[in-house]
Length: 383
Image 1 (cartoon, rainbow, N blue to C red):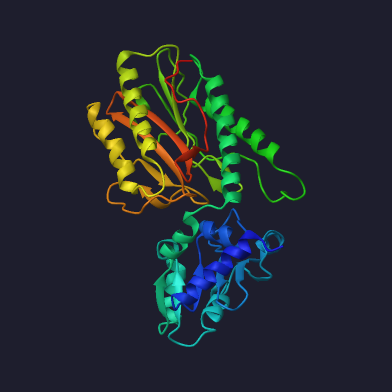
Image 2 (cartoon, rainbow, N blue to C red):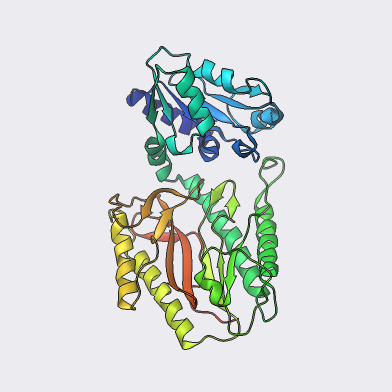
C-alpha cells in the first residue's frame, strides 16, 4: 500500500515538472517530515543538516548524518538514504553531486526562507550556472488542504491539548507557582499522547510534551509570550496559558489558549476578557468556504472597535506540521477559505501594564462552516 508520504512526494514531483523545475532541495525539517515521513531532533542547529532531493521521474534521496541514518531508514519510505560524517566535506560533495546530476542551467527549487545560509552559499559558489527558484509557495499550496487522515491526527492533538488545559486549570490556586501549573500540563499531555500511541508501529513517535510553557499571571498578562516562572499566584490574578509551540502530536501542531482567574474576577478584567471572546466569536461566525481570510480578520477587528479597543495582531494562522503555514487570517490576505484548511483562531486584548484578555482555538474548515479541533469551554471562568 502506498504511504501518504509517497503520494505527497509524487504530487510534488508532478508540480515541479509542470513548473519546469528540474529538482527540489528540501531543507525545512517540517517539509522533510511531510514528504519523507522522517524527522530528527538534532539538525542544523548542531551543524548537521538533513536534506531531501526530489527529482521528477527519479526516486527521492535523503542526505542525513551517519549517526541518524539507521533511524532515518526505519522511519522513512524512501529507500535511498545517503549518510555523511562530521569533518572534511561532510554533506557538501554529496549534495552538489546530486544537484549537478542535471545539465547546466537546470532550475533548482529551494525553500528560500528556510534554506540555511551555509547551504545556499555552497550552491551559489559551486553551481553558478544553475538557476534557483523559490518553491515554498508551491509547497504551501500542497500542504494547505489537510487530508481526512491529517485532520484525524489533529483531532488527537486536540485531545492532548485539552488534557493539558484541564490539568493546568486543576493546578491553579493561591500560592501555586507558575511553573507547577506548566509541569501539570506537560505531564497530563504526555499521558494523553501516550494513550493514543501503540507499540511497535508508533515506536518512533515520542509522546513527550516539552518546550517552554507560555504562561503569565497577574498584570504580566500584558506580556503575551512570557514563559512560566516562579511567581506564586495571588487571589484575583488572571492566569493566561498558551499551548502554541507546546502541543506536537505526530508532528502536527495546534493553537490553543485560555485565561482563567484565581477566585474572583473584577469588572475591568471581565470587560477585557469579554472583548477578546467577542472578537473570536465574530471571526468564527464568518468561517466557511469562499470567505476571504481578510474578511475573517475584519469581523474580529469590528468587534474590537465596538468594545473600544484596537487589534494587536492577526486573528489567526494556518496550522499543520508547521507552527505557521499559509494562509493567515490578517489584513491584506485575499485567499479564500476552502474545506480542509486548519486554523488557530484567536481573540486578544492587551492593556499595557494592567493585563489583558485572551482566547484561542484550533478549527478545521468544513463544507458549510467549521469544526473545533479543541472543543473546550470558552466562557469566563474563575477557579
